[in-house]
Length: 259
Image (cartoon, rainbow, N blue to C red; front, side, top):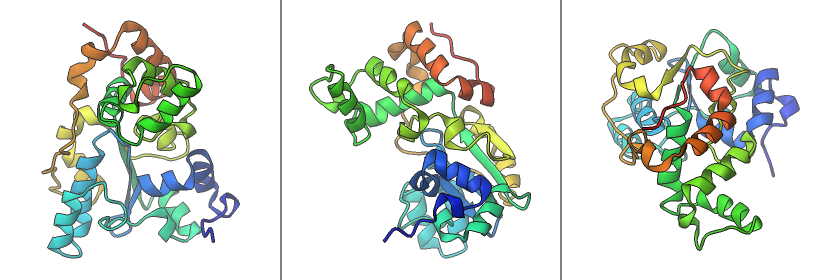
């Protein structure tokens, strides 16, 4: 039996968000603290390991030290190690209130789109992880698939993902404005990943935890920003700038220069 609420039964704003991104994505990427009254909109490949381990540790500390350790060792575990409240656990009217009222702060960490795409390719595609399979299938349909998913070139990756609508993109390279519902919600802060190191005082204010500081770095960081010239051409960068124009505009990023 499917117990997910119908879109028509959700609140007006929540319903639009679920309709655009899907109930699974909304549940996976919204991290809610009812105690500290905030919602962290998780953007994959934008410091989400650091954020979930840090904020998750804050929430887990209300339970016990062993849960803190479990959360910080497994920040991407959603089922057995998350201390956050998830959307499916809340009544529809409460969820709408959490996502729209002034009683809660709402924030996300975002990333320059081109470096985020490169990071996604380096981790998920170049290592042949499951996220490579849908792109491999598209390339097969187009008659230009390589020998295996992990052999997908960066150019072919960019070509495929830039042509997909956000709903069909994997969250690791989905357009961030659509992923977080930028046009639907009022955010208290949209922090650039590139400035995260200097944003912990702000995050402490947003989460009601003065003195909050990050003390965990995601072990799978790709450092993609330092490899841009190795993988991008002006043509590929122009394609990303066009496909992710809303991200560049909404978050105040300039398209990077090569060289």
